[in-house]
Image 1 (cartoon, rainbow, N blue to C red):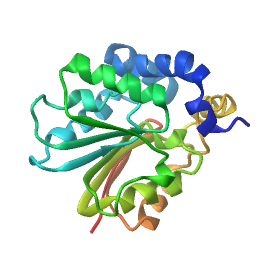
Image 2: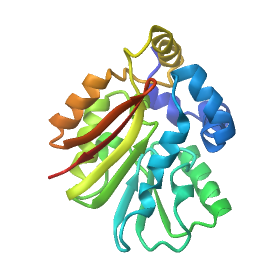
Image 3: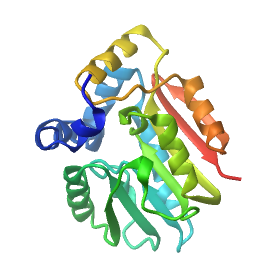
Image 4: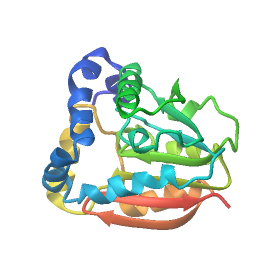
Length: 221
């Protein structure tokens, strides 16, 4: 089985596969039918959840990991005075996110190359961590959730989405293909995701399955 970290960091995936992945996410008119076919989800619900970055008071700090092609940061209102850190393990994805921010007229973003299990941030650094469409791409999603929880401040929120197993056989087959080519990690079921959140010391506020796409919000008390 390919190493998912190496695949996402590779120049081959960065120049071929990742742009396709980002193109789909960046274009709702493409993502909607693709999401229905692959995961049985309504992607409009995921995009709506991303708007949480605009609900924070000025002066707040946000970590977006993995930033990917910058889908979430593009929704940030220009001029909204918050600290926004865009992190990813892939230099190509960071470059794509920077281009997306420039096109959207969003400035003041900090771009950081980082592995989720070795984050270069102090404990309690962020008021909000967003991780959309990312946990299923990680080799150890439970460790990833724990690492993201560590950098949350008390009262901070972890908000995101990931594809989960066990919703329907055909979705699981799609996931097997993605794992075989090294794009997805092991992922887990919705129940697994709930247990990762609890083990990380977070209180689950919401976890709903939008097809095979689980959307979640958790709080660090």
